[in-house]
Length: 54
Image (cartoon, rainbow, N blue to C red; front, top):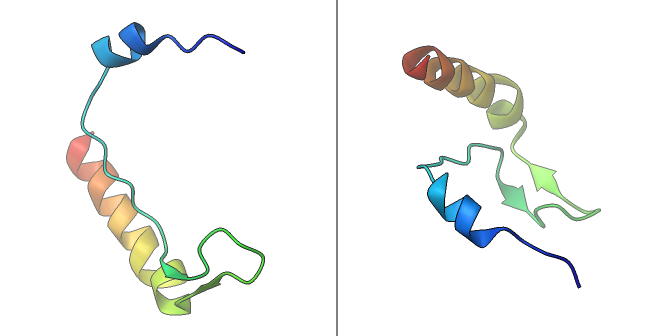
């Protein structure tokens, strides 16, 4: 067993947006992603989000 500081996690809680590629068999050996999303759209989207927030 190990300790998870749930109270601390709740105190520091903030909105999160998980942005990443999608495809069949996510996070498996046979994972497939849409190449255009992975190499073109996603980097542009991440850049836009980071520049908008910061």
